[in-house]
Image 1: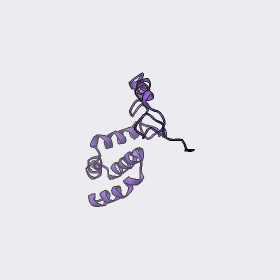
Image 2: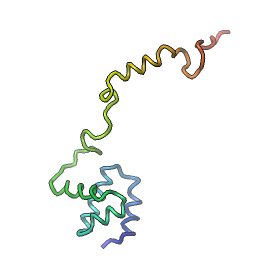
Image 3: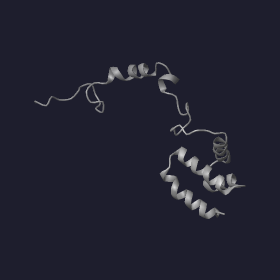
Image 4: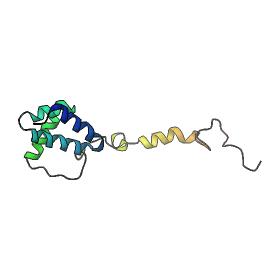
Length: 116
């Protein structure tokens, strides 16, 4: 049986190299390999939620297939235009009249000519 310290060391070494899906897959594999009490042990050692580890174990038991995505479809923040229609036009109206020449320069003149 794997010791907590050994499992913690293995997970700490691998975590920086894995994306979210790979990390959850590793947690699931470790939990299943440990058998009874494996989910709780992996959750405790990894810092992941016990429900996250349990969900990954259940996902495989029901026959979920890898689809190449890191997150579930529809996960993440919606596009700004979808969440706030018209935001691009409002921002353009705020900025456009005052922007001329170098936007980092203060003042109304665009700057001197290169031929002075």
